[in-house]
Length: 326
Image 1 (cartoon, rainbow, N blue to C red):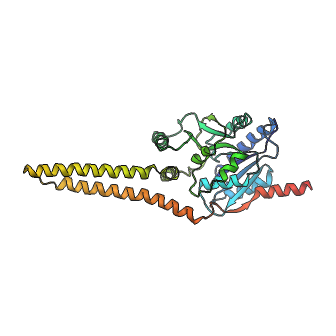
Image 2 (spheres, rainbow, N blue to C red):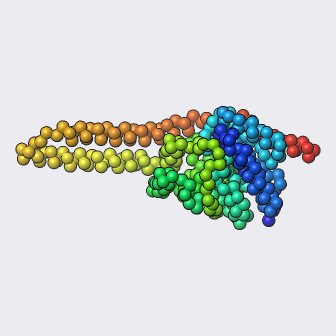
Image 3 (tube, rainbow, N blue to C red):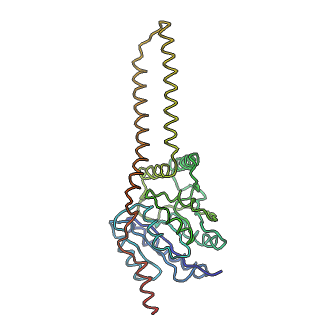
């Protein structure tokens, strides 16, 4: 087995509180991988600053100056978690294998050792999968289960309880980067890459420091993005809903005519108002769903870049090493 070069991509957004804790842990795991001769000694930890407004980038720059195994990428503004991940993957596309992991240490960094071992068994994609959801609230566990069931019902191939903690081979990374869409939902895109895959199970921990960057409204928006990016089933459901309402209205029309012929006419102000409000709400929901798809089409056809890199210490480090070799 010939060790490959590993790049650990870590997206960061306002993580000044957690970086001093996560960096030593990631460095320790990387050194263990090097000592076991599973990866080359020029492997890197690449932090991607997604437009942070605190001292996150300063900490990354400082760490990169003190340790050659650390590099950083600074985006020009906040492009979102998925955009930051993709930016990191594009920068380290020369690596033989890449692992993406969040900086909050909720995903167990020691599981990366098992991931790399799975890679050498011939797997080009290795998913980090939670073995339980004990650290989540009851509400979050319930909504997560519902999300995976809905996505499965809509025909979207996801790995349950797997987020963005995963390993990709160089070939898998390049195939993933070849997908041109702007509406990114990497949890759905990665399974489309294909290739042989496996899973590594781990226990998810509490956040080491700082606050979560995914409050409820962001999680809901993320779920809607996932559904509308990979399935047109909601639009088809609107058609089914419309046909159902038409059917109900025909039944009520026949019922009204029969009652009229029998002379049994009852004042129906309440039922009329309820019907108007119900149909009005359904129409607004349907328009919103269609608008979501139209909005995605609008964003895609503009062809704007998915991210903009302001500073790239990873390539700078490579160039400096080349000069030193000369």
